[in-house]
Length: 137
Image 1 (cartoon, rainbow, N blue to C red):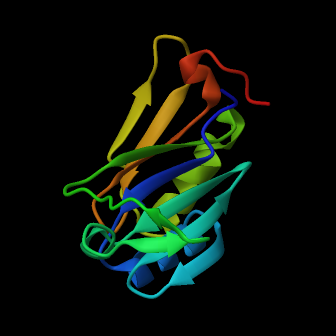
Image 2: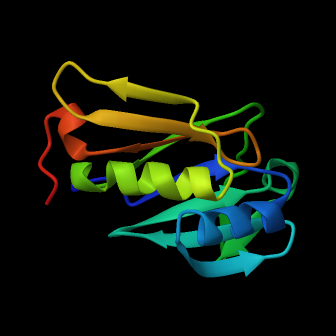
């Protein structure tokens, strides 16, 4: 296993999600299919947002093979890795952009996490890798 290649959250309003993740978190859009999905570059991986109303009901095919139906209801969670030295800069940015910090957690292994919600209600976390005993590089 080499790591997580892609991770996914769900939102029905993809335009709002796209604006949030590009303007607030600075992610680059890789592809956007109206009312179905928006994909972002995130470091060495890809962050996906699907509209569950579409991905639970309509199967697509890629290269002649079907992509399995998937989706969920309710809020999900995703943690983005940031350098510990950047946490206060992120706090200031989020506050300036009107994003409420829901929680600031100090972890037993060291490091802190900032938690906030995206427009779809998903719990988003910014944290240094050391909260899991991992290095930042």
